[in-house]
Amino acid sequence: MRTGHLFITATLVVLSGRNLAAQQTRDIVPTLGISVGSMAIDADAAAKSQVGERSWGLQFDFNLLMKRHFVLAIDLGGQFLDDHAAFTQNTTGGEKKSTANVTYFSAMTGVRTGMPAALPVQLGVNVGASLTMS
Image (cartoon, rainbow, N blue to C red; front, side, top):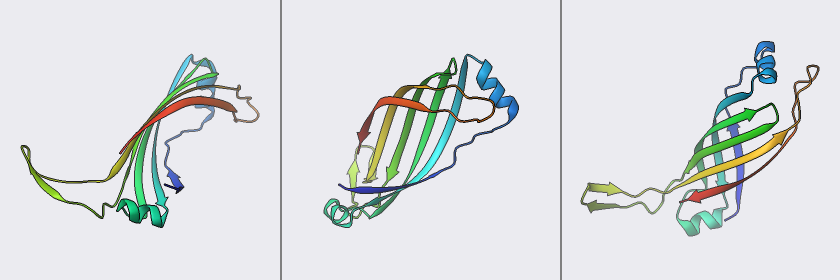
């Protein structure tokens, strides 16, 4: 399935001199993030899978920056598809309706350069793995 991605990120980040200084001196700096995204699905693939051509998703991120140079991160998110083949069925838990969605989990680690005071920018390289369930 070929997909195109458009991500609208609403990550809560506070940039101030005091916070940047704290990142430079603290051994472990945790960060949290939340992203809202939209995914476009190829029209032929969407029709074959009986889902809509656009979905919306939500992702939560947790990162640890250790000793200013080492990163550990996890992401948990999902895409909520428009199910064109929805059905209801009686179960032992009552009547349930089918849904179509994608859930993903990622874990990664990496290294970063330092952040000079004159230019608050870091470069980094991450490696990791993702698990996707639908």
